[in-house]
Image 1 (cartoon, rainbow, N blue to C red):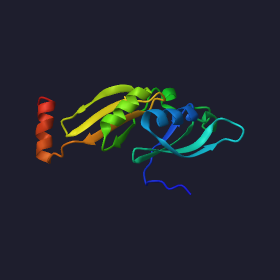
Image 2 (image 1 turned 90 degrees about the vertical axis):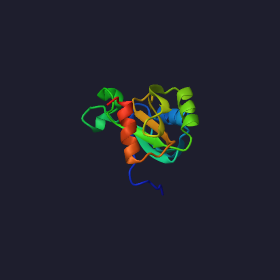
Image 3 (image 1 turned 180 degrees about the horizontal axis):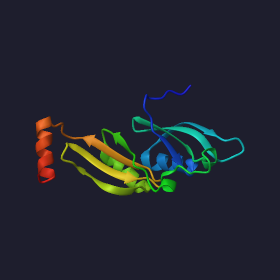
Length: 151
């Protein structure tokens, strides 16, 4: 039986098999389980582990929702960003960029103490990745923000 963390993002994509292949190649995902519709290429459920986090995903099934597609592409984008916090963000970032993500915020050292960047995958899902380099006190963080935002 599968084991899941208490909170897990569930992604809907136009082509789950292609998404799984992409996440494996670009993000180093490990596939835990895949359930496919009988006599179809559509995937009804897949569980992947990326870094130390899990996602689940499936093909879009608009026929189950009154004909309405629910992928980020069909909805004009997604307001949700999936975040991964890790110990070696640089090598993860290099792999993701080489694998074909679209960089939306370059990986860089940030005022709050993390090395952080953002990208979008080919299926319209937004991701952020970070590695804490310096732990700041609340006062240090406020001062760093003042400098960053020129307040």
